[in-house]
Amino acid sequence: MGGEGHSLDMIRRLADNRKLQKIRRERNRELYKKLVEGTLSGDDSNLTVEEQERIMAEIKEYKQFKKQQTNSMMLIALGIIVVAVIVVWVILKICTVL
Image (cartoon, rainbow, N blue to C red; front, top):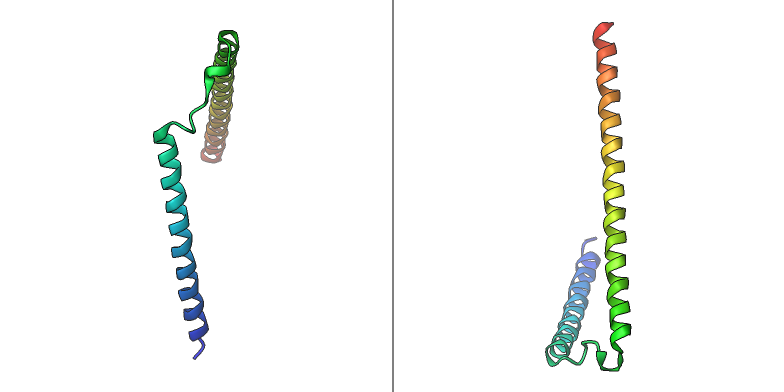
């Protein structure tokens, strides 16, 4: 039979995936423990007030840039849709006249 090799391969892959899932779960548990303990949170004690304000200003500026970029993309997409609708409407008008 030709299916035995396929079956054995699938059984091996399933076993490998179970091992990978265990490893991933262990890593996630360790990460969760570190997050709960607070060891992964940034240590801001060595930053001055001016540096913190500068970082916050940069973050705010970046968010505004991303918002403007998103708005631009939405306007471009809307323009393309409007042009496509007008083209289809014109084509249908021409076809009905003929």
